Image 1 (cartoon, rainbow, N blue to C red):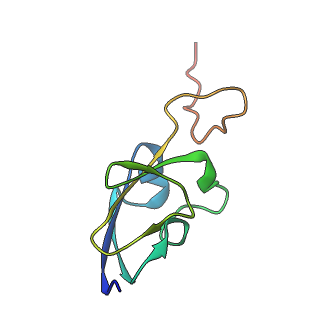
Image 2 (image 1 turned 120 degrees about the horizontal axis):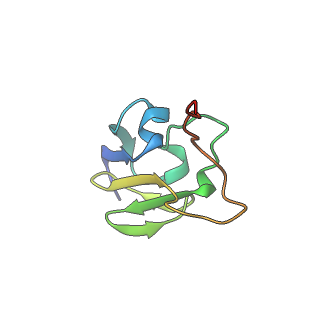
Length: 93
């Protein structure tokens, strides 16, 4: 059984701005689903993000435990169905 402890969640790119910090510590009791500790605006779908746990690919419903490190980042590239999380302002010509 896993006890109480801290999980480190690190946000990359625009997600750090949306989360309000690049890295946060989340206190948990035992194992929790990744989707339950990711803090982003409701209009951002966690399924559209890249998630790593201790350097290995993970999915939102995978579980993490105290001592784990979670990295959350937007896709680097994508296709036509990839949502736009950030679009820089247009510059005047």
